[in-house]
Amino acid sequence: MDDDLDFDEDSNIIILNDENGNEIKFEFLDLIPLDDEEYVVLLPVIEEGEEDDGEVVILKLEESDSDTEESYVSVDNEETLNKVFQIFKEKFKDEFNFED
Image (cartoon, rainbow, N blue to C red; front, side, top):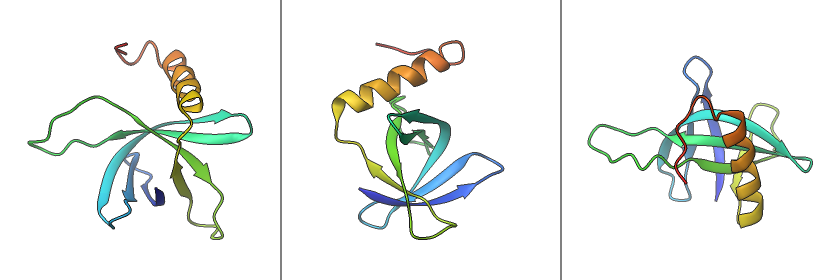
């Protein structure tokens, strides 16, 4: 999934467009460097009436031709996802209640 970034610096809200062009809002939680790559950890913004499953989304930051836009791509490697999430959990262990 390729996503273009629209970032509201005041609220830490990122709006990504999915493959169908639908806008999805996320709260930016952190940027995690790993193995010369950078990964963003995002929390879906729950609209009224929607159920919150508490799962974060991890996407890889990709270089873009534009200086003003960044792109994110899905991470298919389960090992990489787990490493990034473990770093995130350790960094924020006192701020979030993680369930295993």
